[in-house]
Length: 218
Image 1 (cartoon, rainbow, N blue to C red):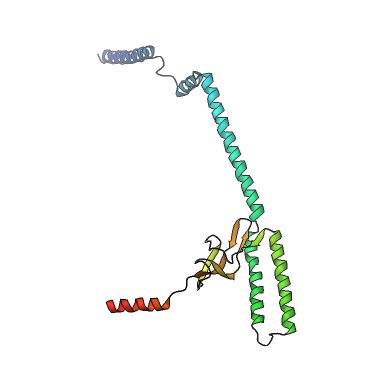
Image 2: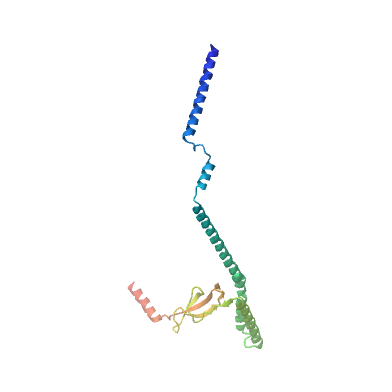
């Protein structure tokens, strides 16, 4: 009796397995592409692409590549040119202190009462002037030139106003005093000129009268 039951169970199990296999085979028949690998689908898409579209895409890629290469070449050329022309920018800026120190030395010697009108002072000042001219000549050969500013209008890109000086002979904002000379290296500013600019003379009597009126109104 038990043997018959075991045989029946095995038969039912086999029937279920056969049914599942039949169902899967029927699905494959209805959808032949359902079990194709993803790689095969991608290759099919590429193969189906129009040859003219492929050529257009390749031409576009080549154009972009050449454009990027050209931009890199131009950028490299610009960097090389700037390194050649402005490579000594920091050194030139520090070297300007030599000219400043020469000017200070001259002023100190000229204001020394013990040396005034002496032959030693005259010769010393002459030597200092020669050294200054030589320095300016070396700077000029390396495209470092002083900024001419006297009697010109104030330019914030080149000048820095330190003081205002009353002067009715010049238009307001005209540079009438150079406190420290400015320099440029080619088209780049090394340091601005420190200057004094003119302004109109204030009418003190009118100003005092105005202040008096204001006090009375209060």
